[in-house]
Length: 423
Image (cartoon, rainbow, N blue to C red; front, side):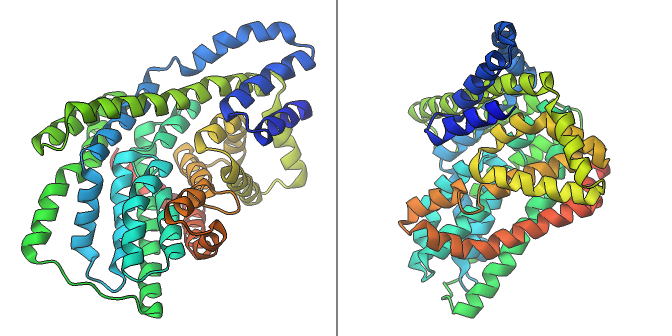
């Protein structure tokens, strides 16, 4: 398998897209290992990798998020968060964290969240007297809630690949999402007091009620999805279709959506979902190669040769996933490593839903972890601040996320309480 990893690393270093790098490296390995005839099966494997009904949830949830975003929901969420906590010292930092949590229930994507909210909130925090590097770091790290709080595209991919219940995974993501938001809010409050960030005027009761009224329809969408799935009213795929219909209805009721904006959302959704599904199909080639060469078993045996302690295995697995998360997109990581992950889940004996929550937390935190966390570069570009300054401000925030990850990994009840309660 050394030749496969060398080829894949070479493609990444030369700028070849991840999807093509996975597919070409896997195909080349089959020929180099004397299994060239099996390459004839690869188109069938690619189709089989995406020929699953539940994968329709991806473009549908993306479309729902895009419709709400172009329909002005992002601005309304920021206004609502400002009405709730904007009057506190350094209130815009708290507004940014709450906005990220609310937006996560709509977008399901960390990069979309960092881009959409960063353009609005980083300048707003700078105007309130906060260092731009701190503002950029706060948006970058807060955006990891996007793939954790339901609906989550990353959770859907994990559920499809592992066979775990997507509804259960959605519910399991609530507590870690709230945990990260709470930890970041405490840090933001402490930082505001320490640095003496200014206090802004409190909104009037009428303004706060108006902001709540305009934002409430968007905020209850995640509840509709979760309750509908758990009550058996609709499947995850049907829930995604309901989300699209709901986004269209409230968009036209508030007169924020137009036909042109709907068309813009359709185009954006097609581009993003095509990219995700293309990566999924190409990574099916790698999964086939890994299975053929029994890579999961080989890696598991190598790990057991080092230690057979389940907690040490879990620690090493977390470190491995965090490192991968710095360099690759979460979906690519899941598809690439899922056969290995399933082997380790069996070795550790962890509940499949808890294990899925830990895995997803790892790969999304990696997106904000230096030196290569993509979220740091996105917010650095938006703010115009050198990425090294953003990294310095992000380190304590990443520490909070890692603390939440450790608690979720060590205490099963934290992630499993809500799924079990709603059975």
